[in-house]
Image 1 (tube, rainbow, N blue to C red):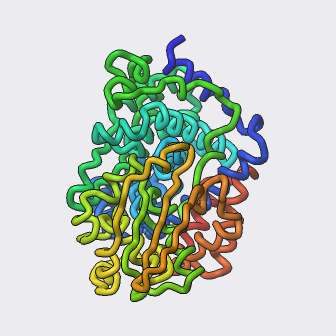
Image 2: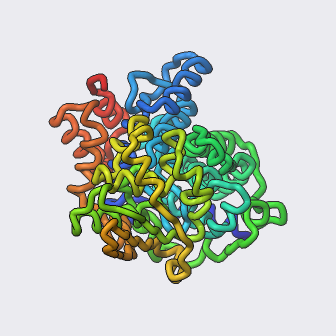
Length: 463
């Protein structure tokens, strides 16, 4: 049996009743985080562009589903695109270090849309999400993120299409043959170019939504008997040969079920690329420990992982002069500067106003990013950063952050996660409604119906 077909068979075997309490709780935890970023992300201009386009393209219908964070309802395919794009728009979505991708923003929109269409409950959604994360993350490891990036691909968009397809297919009750076809169809839609880095374009945000919609489309086609190649992963012209120069196919099937990948997923506390997060943790630690201000600092030197260097540190002239919010999200100098000047690097710091802030601009010019071979020892399992600050008085302060806040080894507690949700959605819900929504999402294991979930999330005030 080939790799693609075996993967499809294993996915059919994932069932809610066979999941541990830890895995079930983790899916609820990730779902709370997903809804927080999706609701807040829906207000960004990039998300609104997608919403307007989908409203223009699709006439209202009786099967339309609510688009969280908005007052609209859309065809489930359009909703998956809109919700996925919104959730990826504020750079606060979950992430997996070893795969260097964001699973929630591709898998959840496809799964929620499929559950809405199929009348499935929270338990069935949970099992589908576990399968979707498993496939997406394992493929992210198999293509080797560094090699995948070097080919110009964004793994959230490419691998996400397969994860979304599997999650949707399970909720449509497809068997091994059906899931295998859905994977094959997904392979012809897997896309996501890193060229957005050139001018800070919105397209990176679209990758998640497109993966969700494409995966859902693949499952719908497979359900109707449309076929896809059953060697899409391992074949001579398949995913592992076309999308990377350093494939590691063993990651797809080895140790299946020993520890589900949802447990290896990190939550972001800072609203930017994950490659920046360890450094920001280190900068905030030194700033607070030594009571440093922007005026005290002469130079900041940050050791950056090789895989992330071209994303957040090079070319340094451009990274020290971001022109858009997307640019800022992928600028280590900007992240360092807002951490020093504002004492935070949350969504409220990644603003047009701060792009023009003279104090932040001055600190950005003092940030030097370097490659540090010592950082690579345990990459990609760990994403460390080194930070060194030299003051005008020639004081030297240094730190090394091995595990950034939000990683499974240094997690946000449930209370910290709920605080993140509350901060992101405060403009949309009263305190009582926020508490109710968190409680509802956390109760997926209780066979929660999608109607009840979306009705509660749609009961909001205008931002």
